[in-house]
Length: 335
Image 1 (cartoon, rainbow, N blue to C red):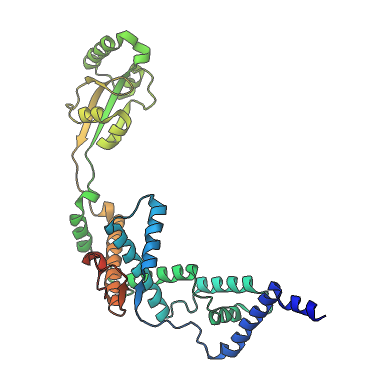
Image 2: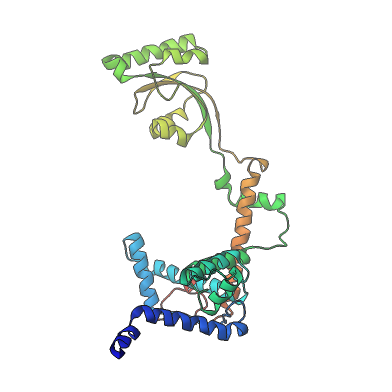
């Protein structure tokens, strides 16, 4: 009887049950004295040599190459930024009453033990007591929430036309409308014309110059061509994508209203008349207002985030083990 009892007491399933009972017993002892969110103090943020090695390994797995010193410094900086955001989110209690965090904690508690009589509020509180609120999913949620918190200014004034115009002036290349041209073409197919291709192209060019056919009649003069015969307001890049860079270059240099060619492309020969052409130009503000407004708001949010992170750095002592050689741009105010 005693021997059988000994084997039973050494059973791993029994150990699991006893540990679970102990954990929930601890909850009963401490639940009344623990705050809804586990406190996190502002203190030293340390990036250990082991963590740096892990960052290097993560980089190699992702890019199949070892990081340069600049790339490794950027990875370390990102790690510090994430830790700053996470800790400050906990300090500010951004996880309290957060629905996403609550759902995660309820899921973890229900996976740990079957407690049909417990409400979500009770499960969340128990999960915090047991320290289940510190995992990668919740960490990611809080980092994102803190980043948005720093980026947002509830008192942000409406954007003025002057601010939008100033942004466009600073980023004129981003909003510049490219030069475009409109043209018609008659295609001469090598497969159809064979050895007569060049002679037929010259004869067709003479016919086009003499007859000056109406646009709707041009298609009937062309050999079958899948891309059509009429092209309106086409930028150079789009023409190059369809016919090749050399074709696009020549089309943009042709005189207006004159049948010209033949111009070669990967498909064959083309006889081309350019109807109109416009130079690159800046669009009106109204034409790009929404795009510019989104870009300005993103720029303001990025600036607020940068200022917020700088303030957070002043609240923590940051130590990077064995990385005194980091450049100041990536290092920041490390101690």
